[in-house]
Length: 594
Image (cartoon, rainbow, N blue to C red; front, side, top):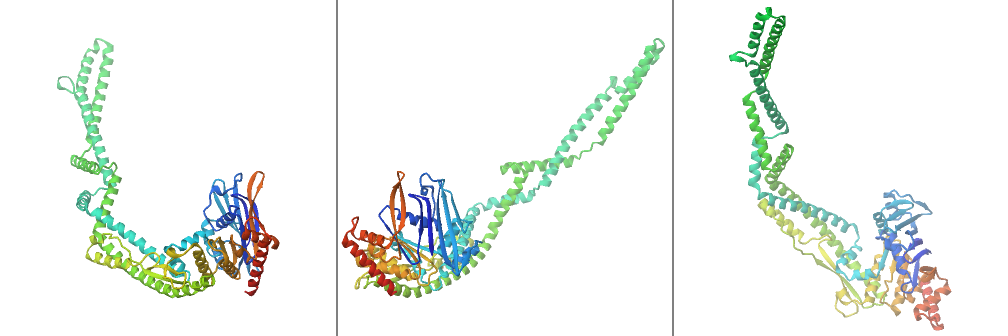
């Protein structure tokens, strides 16, 4: 049970604490007093979406805390253990604190027993702990799409829908992959000739990074060697070119001899003769050195020509494919080869995957048949339980049926015929099965109601009044409560559209539910409020020139006055008080009879 709810800084609530009791807790109050904020606060504990607008003006954050006492053997304990959340238990009861904070920036934080958790964890925990029903659930009951979900809550094995849905999703995922393959294949098949040509061209050329580096280096070195040879030849020609066709060294030798003959005429000429002979010797050494260097330079003209042709081939391929680097060329070759390989192997791969998909769809159909049979068995349970509750809710002649409508839908043609006859035939069989299956099984469900004896059985949305829908929803909830794991039931004005004698029956039904669950009910009906084990009153007050909502647990006398107000309006009269006491006395007698 929810023992305590503490709210701070939420909408028009500044700070309040509610101590709930086991059994039936009734909350009343004027319209706009803040009753809906209590539901919003519970919603935050259950993982509902939070926004900065929920934070009270002037506050930096809003905080909601819920204190729960839960049986130690409840499924909730397993969820807590799964997420590593520590819990203390005494006398077979676990004590759990759930806390949620929303900042004025819209950031949300949550804790369970002071362990930080995500909103997803809150939602998972809430599924096994609290069930909230409001007026919007009445509207959901009019939507036939929701009816199969209600029906599935009466299944003996409630895991069947979940298992089927998981298997169905796997089939959809595989179908999505196959559809993409078919689309890809059709697009690539149009370019098949181009792919063949390019792949053959690249295969014949056989590019590689190592080969490109080699020919590029060879061409670079060949160019360098040719420039070196040309320079050495020019240098040797300059050294060897002398007057009269003689070499430069020979001319200098001749000059030295002439100077030597004239040395007797001047001592200076003897020195010049020696210098000329030394220069001539150096020129001969220079010529020899240049010739030796020239002889050591080797260039294989054929290899160089082949390397230049190979490099030109690389440049041409890069130009054709609008690429810059050889690494890009190699990647493109892999891509083209992969696409061509896909075209060559796709038929076999798609055929094999379609075969596997067919086996999966056949298994899915078997699971759908099992689910359909379980639903047919549940039909009788739904009819019996809900009709019983409706009869007790002042609909004595009401009858209900759950109509199961076989599903039939159109399946898209994904173009598997392009993979051959076998693929087309396999897909035809798969599609035929899938036309009768959806995410929820092989059928839709629709609740049919005859509200009064002798009336035709029609869909709920065509015949039910607001009060009838409220009673059908309460009957459904009461019927579903049998064997449920939920500990706490919350009803937010589910009794809308009900009054008089029917309201008294609704109050009694709430009281009956409270023998097995903790019930928290927001109501505007005096007849319902009279059955409460605890009566809370929500009202607004003005404090420091601001409106603030608060809640008070009413004493027996105060409860009588509030019930009298609900009966007569703003002015409480002696007769309305007497009626209130009569309602309370009647409720206590029926409570003692349970």
